[in-house]
Image (cartoon, rainbow, N blue to C red; front, side, top):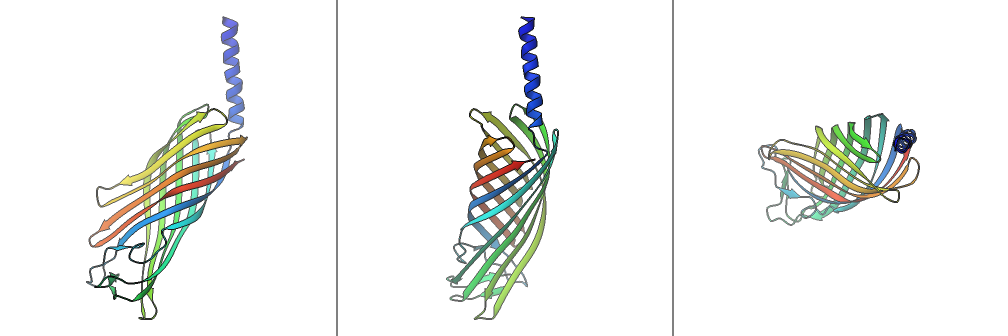
Length: 254
């Protein structure tokens, strides 16, 4: 019995050592996100109350777009630093259908005016992870992250000689949790959610879940689903931004 216990402990120790050796110090992953947009914006300026505009329905922006994303993760033991960047961009054009036109940033775009619209967002994330539990491909991770969004919205009506653009940069500190559960056949599932809530006036959520396949050491192919929801209100200004959809990922470790 003692020999069996000793053999079992030795086997587990060897497995743990070999697993730790296969743990990447640096991970780089590339993603391709097939997303769907639903967004409303209201911008008041110069005493002219802004219209609550749906970017897709009112301004003809294409709600289905695909975006690449790059992520870098540096780890030492239970501690990890990570950074990710994604550039998001949408365009559209339409003749204003509303009888009273659309008021945006102090400018009125009258009915039948041809308006070209663009929405551009640079999304940066810089985070710290701590592995609360890390055992045999089962992991629970605590996350603290600073998200930074650089947002620019432009409405352009060249025939009517009208142009209005609004830019804002928003740093958002968030906290969250990540989980991973090992499965047979070189598979595991993982999920994470990060965000912050400031009551009904402002909240932000970035969540994802995926299934991961490990065909070789330090190499992962994944498929998953991601959900981003941002809501912010400030007096007569408002932003609702919902983006979700499936994604594919390839990760390599060093």
